[in-house]
Image (spheres, rainbow, N blue to C red):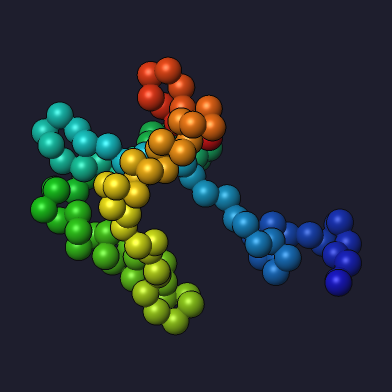
Length: 109
């Protein structure tokens, strides 16, 4: 374990920093039916950043993001296998049985 003197610590370039800052992101559909990716304004920005994507282009964008996310480990990023409706219902009933579902059906935690 290396000891880094406090005076020489650089957040932007020190190898011991393992989690860097990340602006908050939101994804939603606008009134025109397009998908909006919105990034929270940072201290030196004048406003939030918006990227508008037409729905027919979303799959290609998602594939490109997943490809890039997996490129650091030598390949495609593995996604969990999709679950069937029956499996989701089984898990819902199990959570409800244990009191993890609220009266209006929302899942706690």
